[in-house]
Length: 250
Image: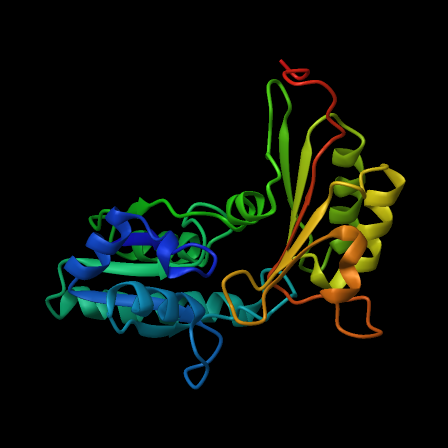
């Protein structure tokens, strides 16, 4: 079983290997929140390859941590995949947003499948991440020289602790990237301002979708829901450090 990263939204960002693996698979699956709702990963894969992926329901909207709904969804998704193997599908691919080894639903599916059938080989095909796409399109280098790069997700039941981690990272010397922070946008903006990083910080939402926005943080009003101080779930924030002379971080 192969987890295939399909990138954040633009079907042209799929690698040649990702396209080949998807086309050669006997069955292709993709995650969704409900069977009557579209799968973003499936849509990207279809636009890039013409393949119709079969939807697997995951509790993607559950923000309660390790809940019963989440574990039940993992178990059911694994059952469907294992049934496909037992039905004769030798090569199964799972299309996942971004990269399959970075905050991916595929991790949980792979763990569950391997626990039931240890003989099934798990592989992954790397994909372009949202931070790479946003950095490229906004013209913001993610890291230079000896600068560290810190990625912090701000989601789930313990957002306050995640926001503390953002503050700590912003106090350092490298670029800070925040995923899934749309619901806490005001707090993130305040943290960036306290760290005096607002000038070069960039915010991207719904990358690759018709509703996408990319703007400097100073223009965040264009990316938030009016009057709410919130942004969509698929929100990426990049806050680079102040950089002086060329090669100064070497």
